[in-house]
Length: 246
Image 1 (tube, helix red, strand yellow):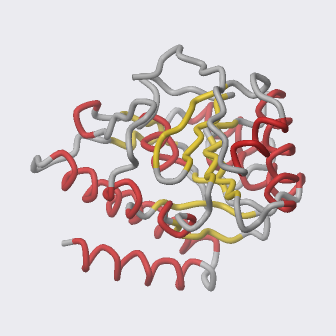
Image 2 (image 1 turned 180 degrees about the vertical axis):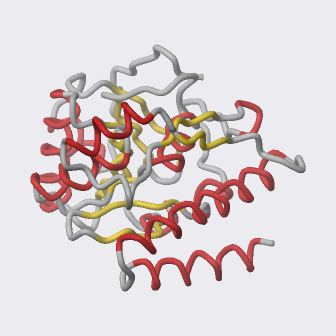
């Protein structure tokens, strides 16, 4: 099963970057099926229970289209997550192999869709999962801060955005900001977010340090000096944002 899914994911990663927007939309739907199969494998059930529910209310669809968003490429969905199929992690837990290896679809400002795995950042001391939305000013400020830190310490820090907007709004914002990091989006982002929170939470940083869930903080509850001390191997006590964590 895992070999087949890895091959399918690799094929999608190559095809997506060379196809038209219409084809990408179809492949994006297929990517959700791949992720659903991984969820089935994790939960040990015959069906994961995660659902994409198309938004068919014409007035809502046309309102979004009128604002210039590409909903042909990024259709409108509501998301239903099956709680029993989600990996739930507490601070101090090692990141399980299943989460390291799960393929997730992510957007980049260059108008490309990537298939990423956390495992590709495993050689960094610190991986930051920044849970953000374009309407959240502290989230945006946090992404800007970590973009700078990642550029300064590229061998030690990896930044992965976890975008909780509707996908149609994500790409235009990434283009406008010019960020170098990728952002996981759509169903993949919500499943990843729920691995650390009981409900969908923006404005939170997930700190993965040397393979373990080290901390979950707000966007302002730490100093740059804390980051540098952590990279030097010190035992830094960060103020955790415990609301909605496991």
